[in-house]
Length: 336
Image 1: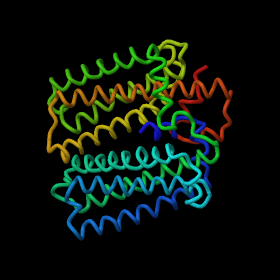
Image 2: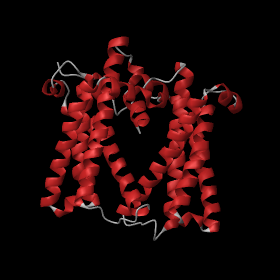
Image 3: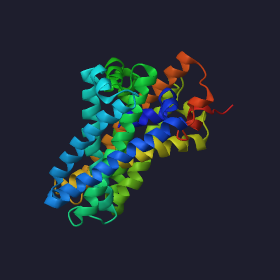
Image 4: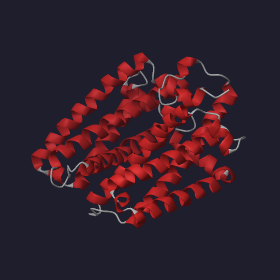
């Protein structure tokens, strides 16, 4: 989900996809995959196939892969066939696989995990669950693919953070001295804190407890990592005090807490419906919490470095590039 965070955290990506005219086009594009997903659900329901989790996930992924490619091509303001013919095969493959299939399966499991928490189990009530999983996954894929296609159109090439995710992996391989030790300490610290608390309070080792307690730990770790990347020459204390609590809480809530919950819910859905595990043990919850903390810290530190690079290469950004409410404060305002 790095692409989703990047498009709402990096101003060079946020600006083009938050313009009013583009957002109106995007809402129209998102409508048709939703209708198509509902029709597809009715076909599956007619044959009773929607009750099989593997069939549901495969159909969701394949349908969303097609949606991703079409939405990506539509954003180029050209005929779909022409747009697809002129695009590199590696780019189209990445859009179909990563933004379409993998992302849709992950979102479908997230929806099923969320419904499980509110006592609406897929195994007991497959009709509504399957329908929501298909519609939410396909419309979300259409939104992201359309935004990526628009960025490709207006910028001429993907920003490095998006192109097959080569940007972060290149950074990770070339500069382990910058991220390796902090991420390792974050993973271990969050794991120990959650494990110790889960061992003393049983409710913490539940789905709701992991969302609340684990989400807070991960949201805090993601915020520290992002600000550290944004101010690489300063210490953690100095970096954190450069922003107000309101600004930090904004980033803590999104993407920190929001994506921690997203990964947790995906794991809950996969455990319950792919592996038939209704309740994870404390050991597994600790491992998932620590692993998610490490992943989010890596992503956010990398995005902080990208934001720092934008600021140093391009100077002060215009207000039109900072419309997204998630990043307006934490990226621009600083204490004097």
